[in-house]
Length: 218
Ligand code: G3P
Image 1 (cartoon, protein in one colour):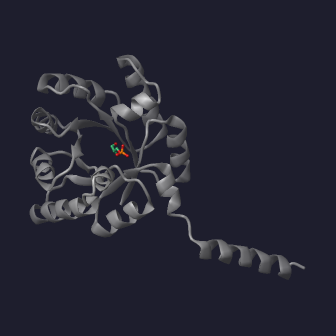
Image 2 (cartoon, protein in one colour):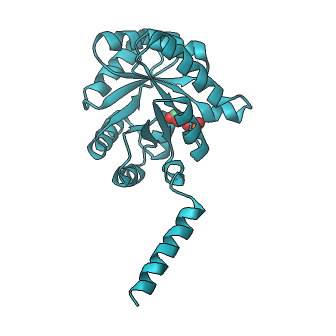
Image 3 (tube, protein in one colour):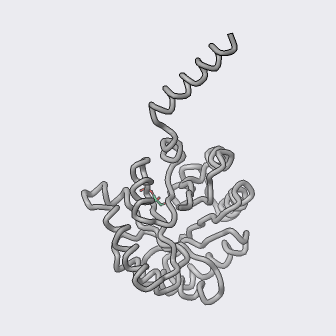
């Protein structure tokens, strides 16, 4: 399972990269705005900065919602760095744009996916990744993990190569459940990744090992 961090914050991306288990980064317009990144030039430079920190895929989202606009934006983003994956929303023009990008060898991440049918369309268009937002489904009392299960089943039935990128991951149990179901990638906050470290028996065990070692040394 690949671990992506879902942020545009360079310090957090650096921390996650130093931790040694990071495979990539996802961003979205809200995360970019949260970092105060505005204006075309600043946005492009920020993506370049992220690509310099992480040796892995970096999802950069288009803002346009019409086909021509998405193509122009996506081609500009893809030209920034070989690791850029163009993130495209799950709308009609978005599927058309993903199909175009696929034919040009530009990798894509189809975002804002909330149903198995949407995931099927993304795979048919040749998306490299599909991003089902599990946390946002849980927020409205729908089962986000059930969606991952359905997509896994559909993709396996037809051997689609589109990778399931579980997005809107909020906590460690989301990561563990997604791994059990067989999501290819998860993207979430660094806190959720670091949460995987924790077990009280590990802390108690380590304390005892160190105490016994100290005793043996006299
Ligand atoms: O990047 C898309 C997704 O991961 C957003 O997550 O927490 O805003 O629902 P969240």
